[in-house]
Length: 492
Image 1 (cartoon, rainbow, N blue to C red):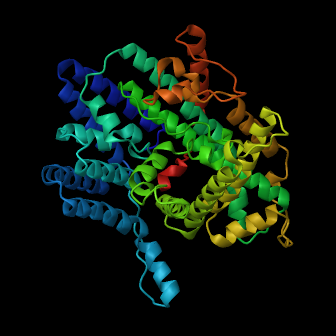
Image 2 (cartoon, rainbow, N blue to C red; image 1 turned 135 degrees about the horizontal axis):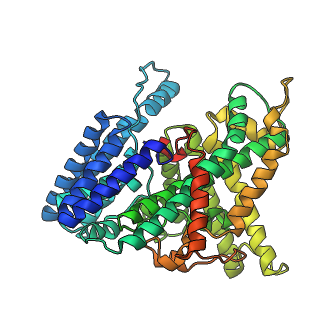
Image 3 (cartoon, helix red, strand yellow; image 1 turned 180 degrees about the vertical axis):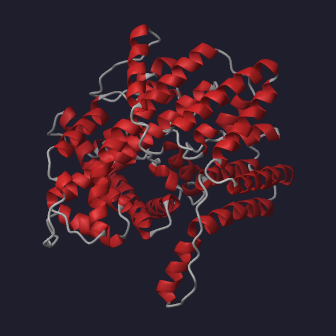
């Protein structure tokens, strides 16, 4: 069930009405209703995988109980192995079989396994819970609260990857201030829906046209390659930003605050800053449960850089079972290593020039960062390594053109106008967290107080004028719901 569908809006209305009615009787009943609704939401796609989700929850909850009592590393290792084994079978069995066949010349049959929705997300959440249980940092929560922590439908399918310390305490408290939560939640949801169905889906055909044609053997012009790559750069931005906003807004309808997961990453002036803004909760998980346990930056520069590369390679593989994702992660790992080396060499002035004014240094950093991000996105989007290489070769004028006719829709001025408008929105308009900052839309208070240079300082208020504006963008989004368009992160 997609957030951007009519059936979801019906589901949301019924779920919210049932939750509010049950809350008047017994808050435990309300939570049980919300768990049931979340399982129904998940099962709408494939009912059989509800049992997979329920089994994963049962094993992890019981494992956490025993781990807390025994503080056993053997039990923790077994719990983590269970989760990684489940993820490995469903997500990587086919990829690993193909890799073995290619490397060893074997002929093992490649399994074709349908990837369960959200398995990457709920697996990482529960691994973090087990690790913290072994550290004595996870309390003995009731089963109903743990069920809601894992299955809560606003964040179940594509994140954020929530942490038990920030979510489970909220599920134990009866949330009030109904009118405030509804107005804030619906506003944020409308913004996210608009980003997805109006902005992301409007520019998506241009990236699809390029990469689809290249996969079919077409060699693009330099103009086509850059238009398609920049179109995808904006598509994935507004798609993921829209989903993140919709998740925050939906959770707020039930009085729950989610952590910030997306904070204007194309305003980043370095790759380090980019990863503090893009998929923030994934970066946090990789840092706390992979990079730091590997040794982090505590064992010298060489070990630090090795740990960064390993972390980003595995982060790329988390996104998808394919060499394109591995290369994407490897590129970002190399970017981060270079960024850290540059800062060590230049000191406090790293990434800037003393001969440039501050605004020029800022924009130089942003554009250089964006350039390398776009190059990496080509691998992320391409269906194969050959396609990615073809697009990049064309982008840098190194591809040998064939005799096929140009792609008509990429030869017009419209995609250039959309790209210019898209980057103007990214750079100069406040993001949703900034726009709603008076009402603390997310958990992290530092995200609410951050304000980027050059951004229009506009704040949403509970007033008639802003209500009409919200209704306007909500109505515009509803007009576009006829198109079936899954979120890009659903595939991960």
